[in-house]
Length: 144
Ligand SMILES: [Zn+2]
Ligand SMILES: [Zn+2]
Image (cartoon, rainbow, N blue to C red; front, side, top):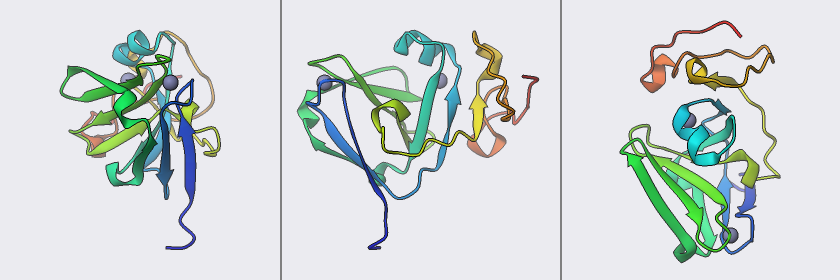
């Protein structure tokens, strides 16, 4: 276990700090409307982790949570408003937004919810209509 990789992340102001360890369960871009409206951006770059791989090392009490649906519990720092992570109980995974873990080599594998996209990204990666079948989606792949 000594070679387990650990990456540090934080919110915009640094009041909340975290680590993720090991390898992510998946990395990519989400185009869904919920991510867009909450992030105020056209896509969300996600890295998915087993919940036990994510540790809030500072400022856990500084995190606020909002869940519009039971699929996603979105957390942000109450001081700076910076978005930190989103828990997905149905998937059993936690999305630590790639942007808050700058040291993590971000290697996107796919795009999800491309049917809801407002920004086309022609990078040659698979464009899932919603989610991969093994994650409960249709598994359908769309044109770029
Ligand atoms: Zn903050
Ligand atoms: Zn999304």
